[in-house]
Amino acid sequence: MVSVCEIISEEYIKPSSPTPQHLKLYNLSILDQLIPAPYAPIILYYQNQDHASEFDIQERLNVLKNSLSNTLTRFYPLAGTIKDDVSIDCNDVGAYFAVASVNTKLDEFLTRPDLELINHFLPHEPTINGSSDGLCVSNVQVTIFKCCGIAISLCISHKVLDGAALSTFLNSWAGTSFGSKEVVYPNMNASSIFPAKDLWLKDTSMVMFGSKFKMGKCSTTRFVFDTSKLAILKAKAAENGSKDPTRVEVVTALLWKCIMAASEENSGSWKPSLLSHVVNLRKRLVSSLSEHSIGNLIWLASAECKTKAQTGLLQDLVEKVRGSVSKINSEFVKKLQGEKRTKVMEESLKSIKDCVDYTGVTSWCKMGFYEVDFGWGKPIWVCGSVFEGSPVFMNFIILMDTKNGDGIEAWVNIDEHEMNIMKHNMELLEFAFVDPSPLKINYQ
Picture (cartoon, rainbow, N blue to C red):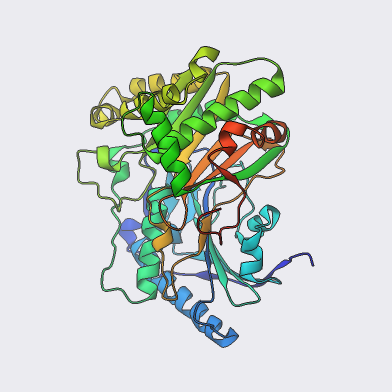
């Protein structure tokens, strides 16, 4: 039977208290302008561990709505609408909230996830087009499975939240839902530290990222690295020169190597390649910003492979990735805040603008998404949107934790012909499982 997802109800959840008049306009920072994606989508899947009935699920929906209303009071820009490219109208319109049902059991879906069905669990269809003026900042969908397992998904404007801020919001909402005494109040002064006085960075980033989108057909595949395979991969890199490589470094380097090989085989010639890695600036800022700071407090670290000879050894690519990230340090962040920040930003982004082959990477590892407990247990699986079949796409990798916190799920989006080549790369298959069931703990 073909799985069908059907919308049951739609409404808007307003903040429990009105936003004060002096907070009605939320200014975006200059770093918020860098983001080409309209939304930061995420889906959390919860099994029906306590055998909840349909009546219990309705009660849980009420709890979700009430706790969301209370949470939006603290995260008031998320209850507003997009005013323009530099501000949010905090008008308390509320978050769009949809409830849907799907005619399959959660465990059946998780046994072999249908990538085409995943996007139906989202309140917004994935798109590369920017989120338009007047649209809600926050969109939520709760999908109920036949077994009364549920999926909670969010599409929140990427103008307001990056991955770390999304985690802060989700965990705060969940804490409010189960009555936690620890209440999170977000820090919202990013725009005062990185003020946006004009739209030059937005214009530059649109041109820059626009040139990286490809016409063709995108293929999305999950490559899963479990704990034991990661240990072997890290040891392989370490024995050849890399000192204490991290799991993110080795996975990023290996995937980059395999993408370059697939590109060469598909086109018939090798091309210089650039990889950009999203770097969280929160711990690199010498300021009052906390881990609960809202906004896009990120920058791009760029690593280049200019000759084919540089792609041969894994440890060489690990060092390139590590070296690029190490440059985004506290001293660099000071320059981003200084009087010459425009020049610093332009020079930093120049390599991306001029590259031939481009791959972007973002890591959501260690962000606490598997800790989001609304009162009925932690998620069995967490994922984002997929771009399978999209005719316009960018080479892009999202790294996520596995449920045990030690492995990595790499969601890779590339050209379908190159993906077919990549799926048969023996070096990759030595360490990664292709699209395994999230129910398999060790992916053996």
